[in-house]
Image 1 (cartoon, rainbow over the protein chains, first blue to last red):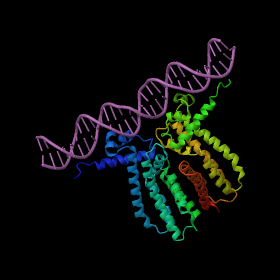
Image 2: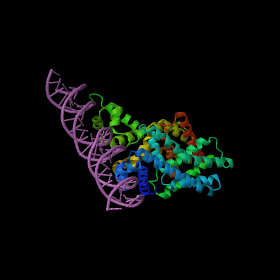
Image 3: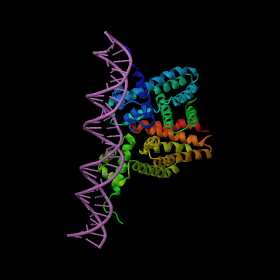
Image 4: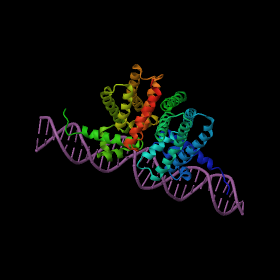
Length: 194
Length: 194
DNA sequence: CTGGGAATAGAACGATCGTTCAATAAGAAG
DNA sequence: CTTCTTATTGAACGATCGTTCTATTCCCAG
């Protein structure tokens, strides 16, 4: 059962454009017509590849998170100390343009009209970057770099802080924002280093 | 020119309910029909009080920010040190249920379809809490409590952090979230105290 | 008690929403 | 060349969107 002509490519293009639109204008703010027009394929064809708008977003979010984790897992060992890893993950989060999707995930999770099944799937995804952060903090604790009482809370706060900065990806220039990310880590480290 | 029967009250009820809905479901996610139904007044009557949906939100945001600043200005002198003020303002932000509106403001500002005049008005409003934070940091610097190189950036980061935590107002219980707010300040202080 | 203006309701507008579906185009298989 | 399957379109659906407009209700001034 071989492929005939390239439909996977089309699906990828649609998902790509949709991800960009969702990131910029949110879930409710992005229409399927919008996605259709921007991707260059008919509205009906979007539904050939994706069951509905919610499922389309889930697919995008899952893909993004999987790629995110894979790339970070490959990059992480390059940094020795936990502190270095923290700085690195901050830059990594910033350079991964898909992280604003986290905001959209929150929008969907918060909205009572969202399908409960969708909500559950999204909740699992939020855990992905959190696990990466937690691994760093655990490493820092085990090497004696960090003094952390509540690992769970610290992880949550750090992730939250980076997530908040990502909201400015479309309104601030790279240099300025990058400095903010680095400074965030510096301040955060001040609160947890021994 | 006296009032006949109470219309100001009606306007207030509509704005109140709309604020709640915007906070929970965002700007695009909240419809005028929604606001009408929840407030108990007809859809047409919403337009009797407010020119359109955008103007309605601006009115809400302006009101909320004005009240916020007034209340904080009254409360602020009760705390002596800059550190105490930081803890206090965190709790204050959390207890003021209207701060999720900041997220909605960002949603509107980011969306290209938003009227540019609206965008400008909203940008001015974001400054309100930032000025409050900056005053605290300045106080801390002048008393020698804090060591801050970049006041502007520090203020921005602090405000951003609190804003991010506010996103969880509807999904986390008060106790847990309050602990997060306090812990945020503790960590932040660790990064800036002398 | 009556006329007038303010407050409110409700129907209706065209536009767009998310979604479905029948028709078509095009490469693969025989 | 025909047939089949897959990829893609475009029109159409009912629902809802933000907004407008025309009543109708109600209080107050005279």
